[in-house]
Amino acid sequence: MLGSPVGHSLSPVLHMSAYAALGLTWWRYEAIECDEAGLPALLDSCGPDWAGLSLTMPLKRAVLPLLDRLDPLVTEIGGANTVILAAASRLGYNTDAPGMVRALAEHGVRADAGPPGPCLILGGGATACAALAALRDLGERSVPVAVRDPGRAAGLTAAADRMGMAVRFVPFGPSALDGARLVISTVPGGAADELARSLPALAPAPAVLFDVRYHPWPTPLAAAARQAGSLVIGGFDLLLYQAALQVELMTGRPAPLGEMRRAGLEALVGRADAGAAG
Image (spheres, helix red, strand yellow):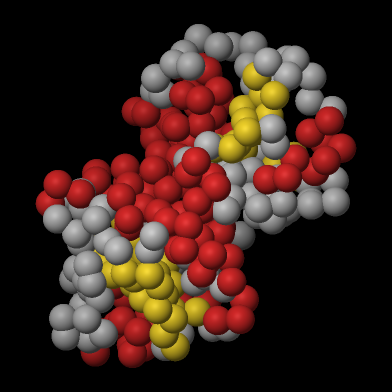
């Protein structure tokens, strides 16, 4: 797992539990602090014993010119969170969008149930681009996006064009939530606190809130949505499903989802206990 900062990542727990369950006891997966400047040299240092890499911010876009081949979804989204190293080639994939689709499906939000809209995406970064791709797979074609600075969301606009989607930027405030049935929040933990305070007054509240954060949990927005009667999906589900897809790409074997889920939840409980003790 490459990124900066990356020490907080739960991905090593998920991947190592998968390797253990698959009998791949000689495989290792660890978090490596790496920024954009250090990424080319690190990729060059990966020899034939490396199966692949997971990428988090700020590397999902920075890695693209360093890859030999991009999965079509990577091109559409404009970011890769997975690099497979095979036959002396670097292959880029994105498991965030299909991970979101699987997490939503687990909670009953599926394409065969019809488009889930009206929808709303909070935030305009790389994860918002993945959310847009997920909503397209669920049947949406036009999505409002609440951002604090539309001038910094050019990447999302370009991604929408490549996907054949339409995005409409709305002010990042309580009014953005009006009428939304599904809200996907991709913003940092405290960024949506004002929206959290406004949720109790909404009638009706969003049917579903998908908050991509997983620690600390619940976020204020998730807690307010749950209190208002919304179905709340947490970022752990996204982390789990996107990691499972990475395991399958790297090992060529089905991911042991149950073992990964148990290991991840145990680690989160340990973090919560440590935080309470501190």
